Image 1 (cartoon, rainbow, N blue to C red):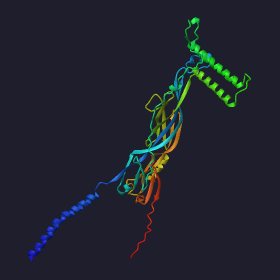
Image 2 (image 1 turned 45 degrees about the vertical axis):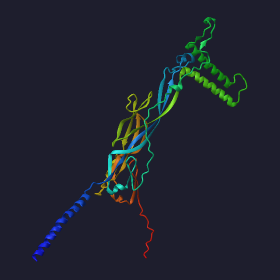
Image 3 (image 1 turned 90 degrees about the vertical axis):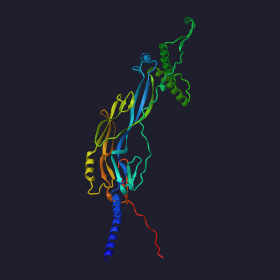
Length: 383
């Protein structure tokens, strides 16, 4: 009897010895499963950039070959004596764009990661909803200009010969006319054209006038001929329009006197690194009252707020001015994402029953909609 009891005791001891390592292994595996690496999706909140679109005109002036005789022969003062470029700013518009904020990179954790939708640049666009991707465009800063000098080259318009007639006094050789003679002939042609047009318009010869259309064409052609000859004294010009764009991303505070680009009447629109132009600066004034009130209401009493890793922005407002010295060239009032406040998306809205759409340009909530559960119309038949 004693031997049987001893044998049974040894059997229980052996079973417990072999079973304990397996149980310990199961506990270890469960512990490792709980303490494993947390998976998630990394995304960013947007920051607002300011883009200025500029339209400018370049006018190329080329002085006339007879400029020195403009006052003497035609009574025209201050005719341009040199070739020069003149630039003018015609139009300026402000636009806003967004890009990922490097200071606001977050990670949606666990099951919440399956809810988010991202734009092509990695900005969060919504939860439980698809993001409409806009057409990708690249804003190129180009400073290429066209050669306008070729468009304003002079061709000699004189109706007179370039040489004096050959006669016995010149040994029957052609002699080139001087610049004075050519200028005098061009001036005489201008006065003759004026007289001809005057006679046509006043019918000085008392002759039957041509029909209306022919009369108009004749008057216009005489005017064009006079302008072409007059250009030999006062010069002529050609114009070309250009478009430029510049980007600026403000920080989280008001910006004063930041150089946006540079401008020169002789060289046109220039990057801010080119010190040959005067600075055109940007001012971005943050609306402090709005930002402070947003901060007061953005905190949550929920101890789990932000645990999911999902956040949105309440953008601030800013007044923007583009200044050329004391002259304002353009202005606007726009929302700026980084001027506002960041808040966690309420955990109660992350159970998969809500569709949340965000503005990709500012990170603000656009809409929150409940998702209706699918209707069950099928009937179960029990035989």
